[in-house]
Image (cartoon, rainbow, N blue to C red; front, side, top):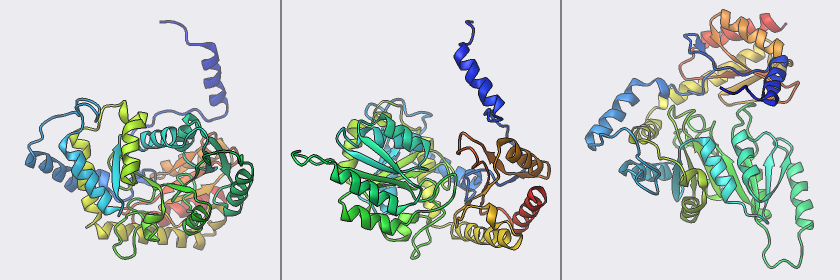
Length: 392
């Protein structure tokens, strides 16, 4: 085997010197404050059994999709699952992708055109930024959740538009409803007002909102957009199933025209083998459980409230980014320091992961607590009490 390239070896050595070398962890039996399985669906034996029964009842006895959805991979479960997802999210259509990453790079590399302008929150997920980089459109980031900064960008680039152009560029405003590394939420109502005023296309990634937030009329975990009744005001929503839904895949929600466009031009959809029937069946069953798992959603909300109460009671509030979501982050600068505290929590039986630079900016390293319906109030109080001991 040839020697490993020197330039690549140097990059690994630099990452190691910065205490930021990534390695694949092993599974463990610690108390879970690390996974994105907010409702416990990934561990649900009921969902597992019902998925199997669905496949048996429809006489689906194949292990793989056998090809891309445009060739042989568009098996019968896709249509019924996409129809149910669209109905659940009160949108015209849904198009399933193999992952949230595939959905974002597919959308952003295909939809914005060369003359268009993308304005995106500076803390948007890597999959969004990677998709934007693959686009021919111009892109500019605005300060995190800062409406005034977004307004300035809109005004600046509107003024700079050529008056002689026969076709004005489209503006896309891009954000997340719950940010994965901060757990906070933008003011979606203001973003809708701004997008309507300037005739922009609003795109919202709801990966960490599905199963956590929902309409007050249903409490069904539909996401933040529907919790405010704004589903008809958003051009596209990206729903990822690997978090609150406990399975795999993603869907882009929008109009029939958007779905047709993505089927024709989104390369991450066109040039990949489809999900297996088992994967799609799991999505279908998990969505149905969202409509009836009120106890799990209620338990998660109660745990979020209890976590926020305890961090205030223990004097930890200044460490934490403001969040009412299942993601709670304590800023502890320095890769080595935050890793040391995570190791101490692990020795005490708690799985809390450190988030290191360069995943987050240097100086913004953090402990990321993910809350679940199956965490107990005692576990939450204990882990925060330990955090007090280690940081103060």
